[in-house]
Image 1 (cartoon, rainbow, N blue to C red):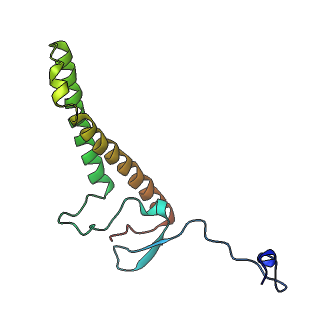
Image 2 (cartoon, rainbow, N blue to C red):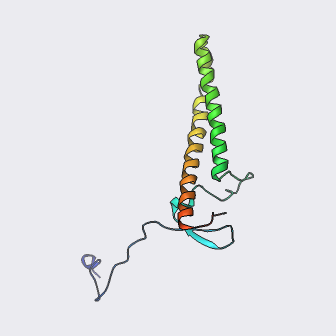
Image 3 (cartoon, helix red, strand yellow):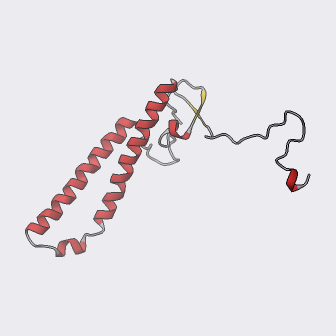
Length: 133
């Protein structure tokens, strides 16, 4: 078949296939059956990641981690304010790397929480169980 006639109908009633808009992620639900989820309905990663510690992936657990990291970032801001008030700016030159090291987990935790919260709402609207793996 020539390249020009690639998308041209070959037979009456021929309709070229369209790729699905959202590819489904098939995972096992809490009741043991396989369910197809869109990426938005799936939320954050649910498997253990082959690590020693199972990751936190429920919205409640992610909210707890987000609040904990917010408190840590607040302590960091408090330390900067104290360094400014006591005019000890040289301390920040030694520990500047703490700021990006604390900022990334803070942003990742809140992004994960909002992603999982939105996924829970979408699953509830379609009456889907929570994926477990």
